[in-house]
Image (cartoon, rainbow, N blue to C red; front, side, top):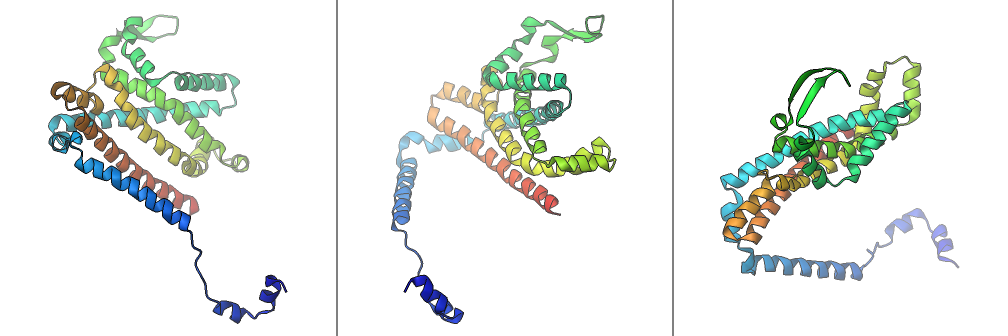
Length: 289
C-alpha cells in the first residue's frame, strides 16, 4: 500500500503525534565552517600584520584635517543629491509628457549624461571658462540683459557640484520614471474622470505610490554619489580621498591613510543605509494605510 494511502486512512490526531525530525544539511554546515575559517584568517591578518599600522590609523582618524574633508564630502553629496533629484524629477516628467519634442530632449539628456564618464564631465565643467568667458541672461539670439564672468561664478567646488548634480540627475530621472510607470494607468484615468487637477493627482495619487518603488533605487543612488565624490580629487578639492592622498604624500603611510578613508566611507554609507531603511518603512506604512 502506498504511503499516501496509509496517511489518508490515519486519523488527524495520529498524524499530529508523529515525531518531527529536522532535516539535516551537513553540506551547509561544512560550507559555513569553511567561510568562518576564511573570515577568521582575514581578521587575524588584520590584527597581527604590522603593515596595517593601526597606530598611525588611530592618530589620523579624527584629526581636524580629516574631519574637515569629511564635511566637504558630505556637502558635495548633499548638494549633488538635492540638485540632481530636482533636475531628475523635471527630466522624468518631460520624458513622460505627451510631447514628442520634450520626450526626445529628455531622452537625449539622459543618454548623454549617462554615457560620459563622471571624471570627464567634472574636468569639462572645471574648464568651461575656456569655452565661455562670459555667461549672460537675456533674449535668445537677442540683446543681453545681464552678464558675468564664468570664472567668477563657477569655482572649483561649484563645478564639482554642477558635474555631480547633472550626472546624478540622469540616473534620478530614470528612477523617478520607473516609479511612476509602475502605477496602474487605470488610476490616472479614474482620477481624470473625477475631475481631479493634474497637480493634485501627482501629489495625492502618484507620489505616495511611486515613492515605494523610487526610494530603494534613490537610496542606492545617494550612496553611490557619496562614493563618487572621491572623483573630484582631480579638481584639487579637499574632500576625503584628496585629503588622504595629501597626507600620505607627505608621510609615506599609504595603507593606514587609505584605511582612514575606507572607515569613514563605510561609516557614512552605513548611516545613509539606516536612514534609507526608516524612510522606506515610513512610506510603506503610508501606502498600506
